[in-house]
Image (cartoon, rainbow, N blue to C red; front, top):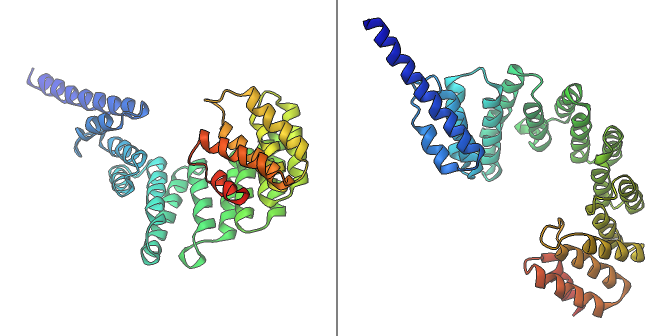
Length: 316
């Protein structure tokens, strides 16, 4: 009877901690971050749910932009259970975010910790897209003396290709863009769009960024033919006209149609952005009065529209 009572108390405690973990995770997923933190902090280091509780406390802290705390929680999670790839991936994410605002000397000391966290995650789960992407980000952004490597970045991107070809093409495009090899990046964006035509928009934005405007127009028009309900593609046609100063009639028509077909409160990009792009087109045509009116209308909708502020100064 005594043994039965002991077991009852033991399992009763286990279920209590399990319930607290479940409640903390539920609150976190509902973005009730403070309440989630309270529920998760109840779980002590001797509890079976401790590692997972520390992990989710790290997620809470990360979402609250408390990155040093997040790093500490993820580190505690890995110490409590060193078998979970996600724990190491998020440890790498947190340290990497801390490093962004650190000085050069501290970045140099943090860099190997970032890399090792992602490498450990990949060792535990080679098919983890998040961990492989972490390596791509690290190897393409860290200087060589801190461990950055174009060759290793390509290896990680190709590992992603083995897991998910679409993501693999995006990963390789990221590597080639950062390596300043846009022709190679273009091939990857095209390959991604062949797998998923929904990625044509990303290809078009790539062309915009490279100032390959003829290709941008053609890509957005092709995308709109396939997805005529996707109004943001109309905006991008207008944006291409505004940036390039070419095909103004098409740009004006596209932006006006975009504003007519989208709800002013829900449109993304906003109507303020569309008015600003219209103003850019008229400005490049030499119609300063029309441009001025549209820049003012853009700022009336969104006083923080910096490009409209700069445009208004140019046409006054």
